[in-house]
Image (tube, rainbow, N blue to C red):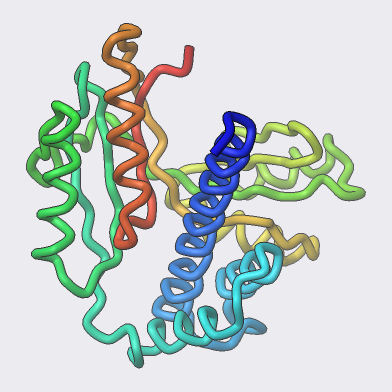
Length: 237
């Protein structure tokens, strides 16, 4: 295979992997939304958002139906949401969220990734002071007036509203999630994404020799089919 065709193959592989990760997260959001708010999108705002995301990413209908059954306790019975916390090379904090029907397999895989990349899996709660759970909403700008929208979000409890490349990112305390959601429904705005995310309070800088190992660990974790989200506090240089 020539240099050019090999690059194209690598690019396609990366695109396929990214697509798979989008599918996994979107489908997990469907199941979680149903577990917490029921299977009716008209009455479950988070489910409506999750199904819209599946449509946007062209997720196959069969996959969506399986995620719905999983959320209702059908095909997904026996699945549990399990978190793992640890440190990567250079002391980078890494928080891993998984959805698994075999915790023995999942913890063995996660531990092996940390070990292979010179990191270590820690005890539950070891990263409690490094990440804060925040309500995060991503909203298309559309015809929204920036000043008016910003004031409405602040009234609902948002701490930070940023507009970049036609998208608002609205961040607030975890406790404000419901109030921000209600305000968005009142003004007839549907986010592209909505959920609780782990935002680093402090960041860790690593040297050029350590960086590839950190990136490799994050990539290995994200590639695992049981992993839903990977959060880290690597300083973005």
